[in-house]
Each structure stands twice: as C-alpha cells, then as structure tokens.
Length: 181
Image 1 (tube, helix red, strand yellow):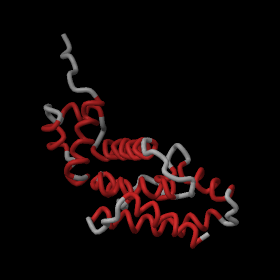
Image 2 (cartoon, rainbow, N blue to C red; image 1 turned 90 degrees about the horizontal axis):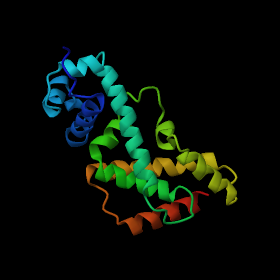
Image 3 (cartoon, rainbow, N blue to C red; image 1 turned 45 degrees about the vertical axis):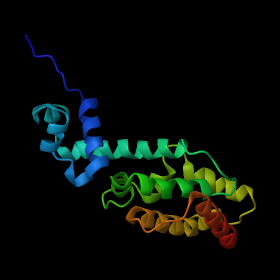
C-alpha cells in the first residue's frame, strides 16, 4: 500500500513564503524549508525538480502578495501615481524582505521593474491613463519621473530613513506630481 502524502505543494509554498517574509530569500534553503514544513527534503524535491524552480514559483507568490496588498489599500486621492506611490512606500516599510526580493533582486525572472509594479491588474497603466485624462501631455514620461522619486522613498522606508506620515507622503507625492506635470 502506498504511503499517503501528507505534505502538499501548498504546504511547501506556505512554509517557503513564511521563511521569505521572516528571514529573506537567502534563507529559503531545502533544509530550512523542510524544518519549517515539518518534513524531510524528499517531499520538496518530489514536488519541485530543484530549488530554482521553487524560488521562481515563490517569486510569483510574492508578486501576487504585493498586487493584493496594493488592491487592498483605500484610494486617498484622484491625483495620479499618489495612491500607487503610497502603497509602494508603505509596502517597503512593512514587508521589507518581500520588497527586497521582488523589487531589489537582480533576478526578477525576466520581468522589468515596470512589469512588477504594473502587475496583472495594470496598476501603472491605469495611473498613466488617469494622468492623460487629466490633461498631462506625456504621462509615461511623468510616470518615470514620479517613479524615480517613489522608488527612492520606498528604499528609504526599507532602511528606516523615511519618517513621513501617510498624510505627509500623500501631500509630498501630490506636490511632486503637480510640479513635474
């Protein structure tokens, strides 16, 4: 009689995601993952051919987590790029290890930073359309200028050097948008 599988692919992914959130991608190893999932390494390599395959899938899970995070943030203004910027900056401060893995990793599994932020929901595309709808002649260029500012603020949030309140961040992003427009 074959042994019943007790560790599922989802169990392994959940354990990997926990390690990623708590300790960072460098700590997602087969041994640590097996210990976290309360199994040997055998079930991991029954499901995944190697750790690279698992890390690739984990990257997708982390990107989905960011997109769900952004979707769950209430919109505070109609000024383009402000809500996205606030969410990105806040995410960097609250989910440091995930932010590093998704947005600061040299290996983004063939995706650009734009692709990652735009996500499957077209986050950036909607903001660019909103800016165009509000009379901005070159909304794509404006996005690039805003994004340099937003990404810098998020990196400051990641390192603990960003101490503006959410209200101050909204005002700063609005001012930046209007001055660059």
